[in-house]
Length: 315
Image 1 (cartoon, rainbow, N blue to C red):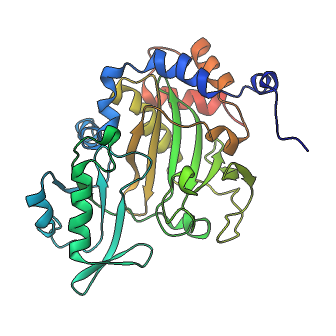
Image 2: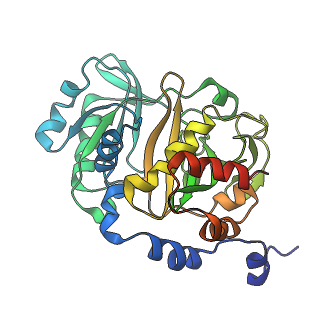
């Protein structure tokens, strides 16, 4: 059996290729001068806060080696927290701490971290080890999201998130990204997380993709991936739609986590979202993008754009 699919068949199925994404949507819709709004997570968080959008609390920022050695000052009594590079990508450099353990800390995978281990990791972030282009960076220390209980049976450690592709302010395709044992609790597909398609009209999950293969059950828990209602779906659609005004980018990925106490929170935005979301949904992006270009009104607010896609993209 051959896995080769002729390009004309992919076009016929409405699949958006990498070259077409870059030329028709990223180059056309995303001016490079606006990239810092998504590439710098500190700036993204501030823009979201200024717009009154919900984000995980920021406990503090480590900007130099002196601050790194005194990082416990910014924890302010919090025993669990997340460390992430402000200009990181793909989940690299993120450390999730779940508790204090004597003089040290406990990572989400059960590994112990000494205080010196954390100082060393902060130093690596400051040096630019995880940043775009290896430039010097800052480390963010923020609230550890407590995932909604609905994900307990289909996730291994970590925090699932919802990735939404947004075109001209219209959410066009969405997937749930689920951590696995292989991904080390991270929700990034290239690190081994599962992507599960979502019906954009109802917020119901469908089948999934893992390492580019279609799957129907979570590889660790063996629980079905389909038929789960994403909590706060209307809110998620509206938050993702607002990413357009927040950044000015015509084509972007919006990542949203669902905290059991605070509900949907904006986690990150991406100017170059990947295309595996098409495999997770078993649906090409191109026809929806073209429909938005033809029929999507230019003066609709975020609520009207969310309502438009729920009506037009019903499964």
